[in-house]
Image (cartoon, rainbow, N blue to C red; front, side, top):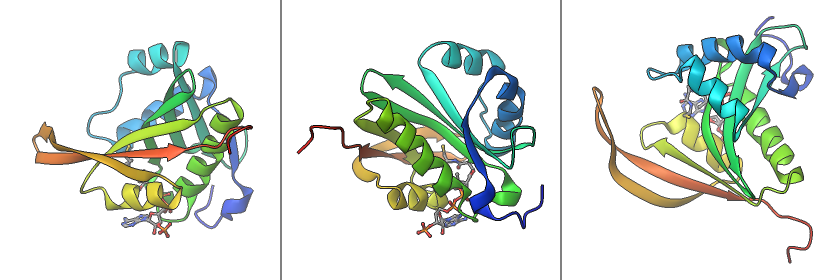
Length: 162
Ligand SMILES: CC(C)(COP(=O)(O)OP(=O)(O)OC[C@H]1O[C@@H](n2cnc3c(N)ncnc32)[C@H](O)[C@@H]1OP(=O)(O)O)[C@@H](O)C(=O)NCCC(=O)NCCS
């Protein structure tokens, strides 16, 4: 897979159990606090659903977005794009595709929280229609210090909405 592959050629598909190891590797590359394999498994056996971006069905996973869904609401638990492919529109393509699938499944509202300092993620979410709903002051306390969480909401129209 080349970083020159046109983004329009990438495939958006729902994560299957076969894809789980690749998603776990990408999670560990992207985050200091990756989810354990057992947490991934329990989410996907329960309320979780995830979408991936890749070049083809048998090529590496370039990005994932993991959601938890309850009734007509979803929460974006995490999203990661492979470092070599960041800043090329993969995140935008992934979120927009995942929101479209969630909408087709009857989801009306998607919520997420993000660190105030994560400007790439904030730009991505705002570009995809998320609106700032609330600020949780000093929500994250870890080795990096203390940081606010921003809560964003995206409303998805459903048939019959005026
Ligand atoms: C956040 C992340 C998913 C964004 O994915 P991406 O594919 O790089 O984003 P895109 O190329 O689709 O760009 C989306 C927007 O973010 C902006 N952006 C991307 N990287 C940026 C950066 N480093 N700094 C500032 N803005 C940035 C783009 O300009 C674009 O803004 P626009 O729509 O106004 O033009 C990716 O950087 C990532 O995986 N980060 C590590 C994990 C993480 O922080 N996840 C989010 C918390 S759960």
